[in-house]
Amino acid sequence: MTNPIIWVTLLCLFGSVIYKKWVSEKALRKLYALKMKQDTDNFLKMIDSPYCKFNFSKVSLQMMKLNYFMDLQDHPQVQKIYDQMTSLKMNADEKIALYSRMFGYALQFRDRALAEVCRAQLTPLLSGKKGEKAELIRGEVEQLDRIYIQKDTSLIQELIEALPECENDEIKSLIAFRIAKLYHYLNEPQQVEIYLNRAMRYTNNDKNRKSLMAMISDPSELD
Image (cartoon, rainbow, N blue to C red; front, side, top):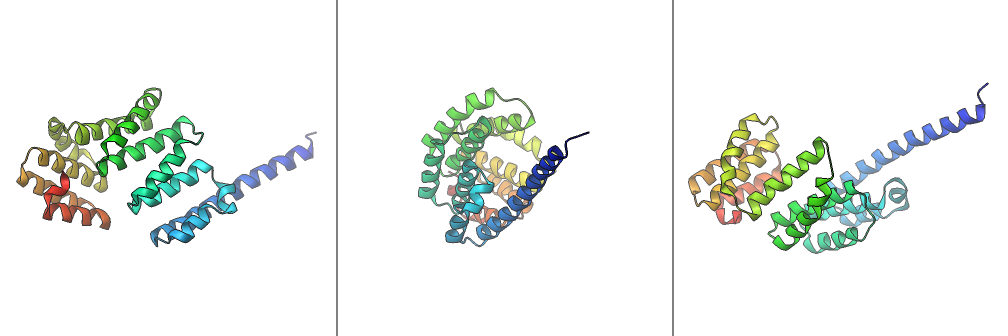
């Protein structure tokens, strides 16, 4: 006969997993609501609460802070949290998440030195990874490197061909923006305007639309 104590233990463990998942989802909803309101004080207060520290790892909490301040474009806070995270013990997936996020951010704000540090960290991490997710990240890092650092305009045709194949409108918007950026390097303002307008047409993100409108008015924003 099976020992009933074992079954009680298993049921307790199973119940605690379900409860923790429910609590985690509830916490994430609260954090998202605070993020959308840009309520920084309460967002940070909740992140640092025992409630969140119990349900999320330190790395996860720091990544939430990093993403929050990236969205606000608060560069000093981003740098501070990034420096703190590099001193934490992280597994390979956590390091890839951190350095790939920072790589894109550094390129966006023209911090080439930081971008190259992140790329140097990512290269060996990604070379040891297999699977679709690793391939996607590896491909994205290579493409961003070619666009923002190498300014490789030979990529234009490849991106133009990829555009109709893509089913997601937000990704289409991103591809169109990258084509416009490469045409900007070639000093072809007509093509720049065409693809910035396409990027505008595909996206429903208000922040992206605002940025694209600023670039259409002043293409030097693409430098």
